[in-house]
Length: 216
Image 1 (tube, rainbow, N blue to C red):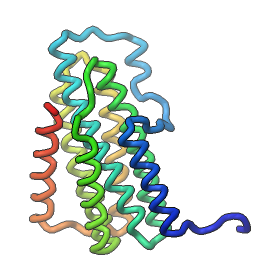
Image 2 (image 1 turned 30 degrees about the vertical axis):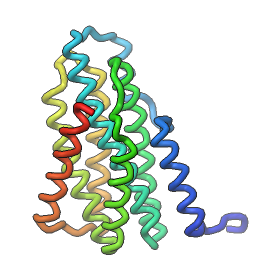
Image 3 (image 1 turned 90 degrees about the vertical axis):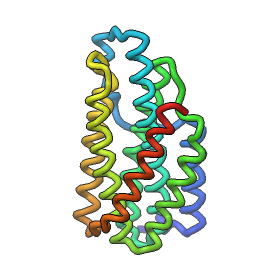
């Protein structure tokens, strides 16, 4: 259509820069309603130790979303397939909601997000760009495996969150639903199953990230 132009590589990199500034400044936009609105309306009564544990777990989740945002932005800018770029950008948009929800919950619990956010973002962006260099099907396979591991990670957090923390639980449940959808989309688009050494390396890297982010 007249008046609509295809984005140039410079346009795409400028968009990535804008997104990075938004993420690193701690001001992501949230396009969807708060998944914990009903739980907030009912109030909550958590002990101080429960708040501390919940905040640490939600800080880890926030870091996971920082990494996901960076991964998808990198994969979107690297692919030459416009339809696939739209898939990655849609996933990044949903991860932006997760960022807003998790950051808001950490602050609501009286704590702070990780001090290493720039490091997490930069590292994840580099990994996403490297995965894309191996081809779109590998990139999609990386997306699918990432989301499978994130799903397991979120399930473990549902077990570890305080029983009375319905707000955090509602946020994590919606995140889990979205991540399952991202993995399914990646496989439907032709994502390859990654070899076990790659899956193991991803698990080990995720363990380092989650352990560090719980405290720092």
